[in-house]
Image 1: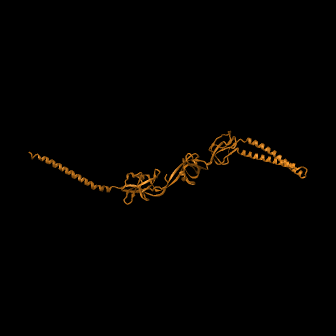
Image 2: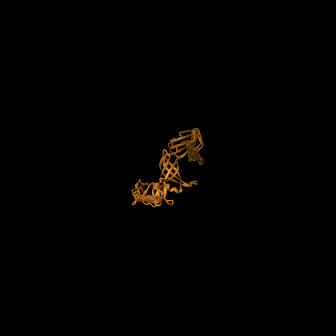
Image 3: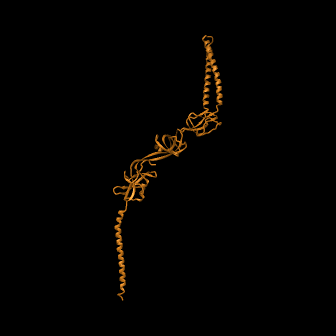
Length: 381
C-alpha cells in the first residue's frame, strides 16, 4: 500500500524535470542563434546616405546693408512773378512737359505799356532840349572866341547842354528798366521739366513772389538717405549702389555726404544720384543696398548643416575620408541671412560636410556620401 503510492509522485516529478530541461535547452539555443545572427545582420545593413559639399575657407565676407530714403528732384522750383499783378494767360496744366525758356503764363502789362508811351514822349522832349542846348553852346563858343560875350555865358551854356544830356540818359535808363519789367510779365521755364502743381487760375491776382507753378526736372533724381555715422563708410563717395523701388531696380552713385548731423536722429544725410525712370517719382520710397565687409575668417554653410552643440555653439558634421564616419565639429555663427550662415571654428578648407538632415545623425556613424551643388560665397543677403 505504501510502496504503491510513491509511483505517481515520482512520475510527476520526472515529467516536470523533463519539461524544465527542454525549456532551458530551447532558451539556450535561441540565445545562441541571436548571438550568431546579430553580427551578420549588422554587417548586412546599408550605411546611411548623406548629401555633402566641400568647405571653402575664406578671409572675410560681405553682407548687405539696406537703408531707406525718399526720392527727390534736385531741380524742383516754385515759379512766381517778380511783381504783383493779374494773371492774363496760363499756358500749362499739371503734368505738362515744358522745355527750358517756354512761356508758361503772362501778367497784365497795360500799366507798363502806358508808362512806356509816357517815357517815350519825355524822351522826345529831352532830345529836343538837348539839341537846342547843343546849338546854343556852339553859338556861345563862337561869340566867346570873338570876345563878343563873356566866358560866364559859355559856362552857363555848357551846364545847360550837360543837363539836357543827363536828362536824355535818365529817360533811356528808365525805358530799359521798363523793358525788363515788361519781360518779367512773361513767366519762362528756367529748365526743362514737368509741371507738378499749379496754384492760380487765369484772372487771379498775385502778390509779388507768390508761387504760380511747381516745376520738377526729370533729367536726374536723387535719393536722400539718413545714414548712421558708423555706417557712413559703407556708402563712400563715388560708390555704386543698387536701388530698389516699387516698380523696379536701378543702379545709383553716392553723390554727397552732407556736413550736418541731424539733431533728432543723429544721422547724416547721404545723397545718391539715379537716372530718371518712368516708374520713379519724387516722393517715392526707395531701398538702397550697400555692402559691409567683415574681416573674420570662416566659411559659408547652409543653415540645414547646423545642429545644436554645447555651450551655446553649433555643430557641423564632417566626413572622415578614411573611415567614412561622421565627426562633429563645434562652430560659431558670425552671420546668417536665414538661408546661409557664415561660421568659424574647428573646420578646415576642402573638408566634406553634411548639408542637411543633421538632426538624425550622430558622431562616429558610418555614412555613404553623395556630392551636392557648391555653396555660393558671395555677399550675404
